[in-house]
Image 1: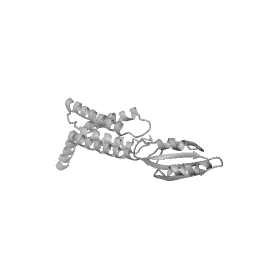
Image 2: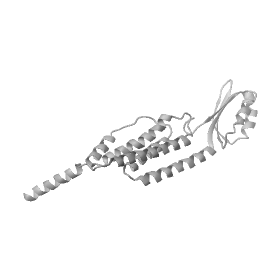
Image 3: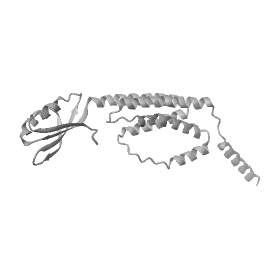
Image 4: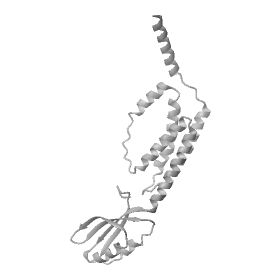
Length: 226
């Protein structure tokens, strides 16, 4: 009987010890917010520098800064109490975001912001700083390699009289025929080409051919046009 009482007392003391909040100073909070804000601004700069879409969204980019800071606040909060951390995990597990992400690379920036916020909130500042610099440099290097050779869709709509002239000009390019639509009045071809620079003079040459109605050059990622 005495052993059961001692066990219950020990269990209660252990639970009280787990529920006790660990003191966190205002300096730690300010330092964590300042560090997460700085890393968030670095993510903001990298995203803006490496963005290759059509319309740049300032508001979407700002969310990376706020996401880093909010994640750091959450980690600082749940690190003070194990019971609160379990409840926070359960609460966050039911959150669902249904906004479609058009560019898969945006998911990388989201995870980067969350990871940096977790490391900053856990006071692992070297991990957050060195890791963010490494990820940022990798994204800059990969984005520069992407710019050197980008895929484009060349859409040509012409009449039958311009077939030979169009073929002569296309022989000067390295291309892959994606689709060809033949109608009574015109022929439409969709061609994939890759450009290493911004030299698009061939578009003017093709459009100047007699019998060519219009020529369109569209940049795309392989899955969707931009």
